[in-house]
Image (cartoon, rainbow, N blue to C red; front, side, top):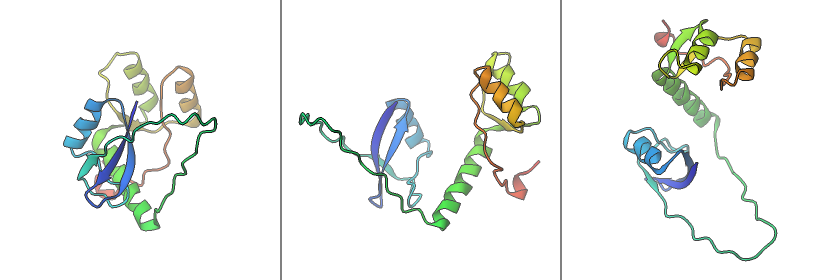
Length: 145
């Protein structure tokens, strides 16, 4: 995992975590990165800060500060929902079965979403299948099947 300091064209700075340098570049050129503060898609990587070993025994903790307003939170929620809808297949009630088939490589790997009971989610996790339980995404009516 690589952590980059990033900046948008409005000079907002933030961190991005990527699997590799190629993953960062692919997301950047593919328009998948945006500023969490203003949603600008013009993102640049900042030069890394030099590391100086001062010999200090205690690490300084850097606080994460958020200036998220309710309007910005709603905008981020809508963008998240749109991303999930655009980049996953809705398998509905077949989610547990389809997740197992993907895990067992019986079908091609792909991002899926659907419904599962808390017990089914627990069983999938016990089997070593990574799943993320999300609250209702609030799918816009025009995006439902």
